[in-house]
Amino acid sequence: MSRVADSNVFDAMSQLFSIPESIEKFMIHSRSNEANENKGVGAIPADILDTSKEYIFYMDVPGLSKTDIQVTVEDESTLVIKSGGKRKREDGEEEGCKYIRLERRAQQKLMRKFRLPENANVSAISAKCENGVLTVVVEKLPPPPKPKKVEVTVS
Image 1 (cartoon, one colour):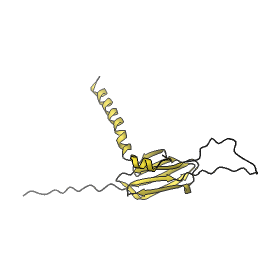
Image 2 (cartoon, helix red, strand yellow; image 1 turned 120 degrees about the vertical axis):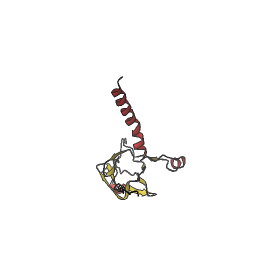
Image 3 (cartoon, rainbow, N blue to C red; image 1 turned 45 degrees about the horizontal axis):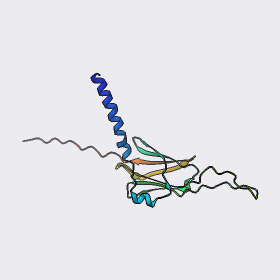
Image 4 (cartoon, rainbow, N blue to C red; image 1 turned 90 degrees about the vertical axis):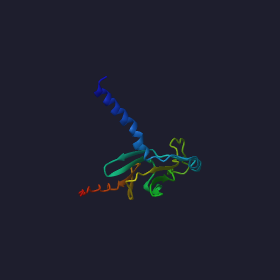
């Protein structure tokens, strides 16, 4: 194998193994107390997009409206999304109507917590729920100014 091929393989492997580190910064690991405390609570699947100006969280919440979902920030750095999970069943219009088959499960309580990075602006978070998708946008803080270089003459 040539040096160029070795370098490309090394670069590809280092990028592959750095992916969990970038994802890991958002994850909150369950502790045994939290697991026992939150029995019967499902996790909301999420996609997280990291752009130059913001973090965007996309979560599927079928059957839920915006009034069913709460988005909060705990401890100044933990984004919490939860829902009471009450899906309404359609009632028949005539008396004596009843369901003969129920395949769609009633929504369970949902909750998901994300640890926000230091550059997340927790006072600039917006959320919208459209067509069964919850989108939460967390703006990034501007990067700190670079320190100025001052030359000092030595006498």
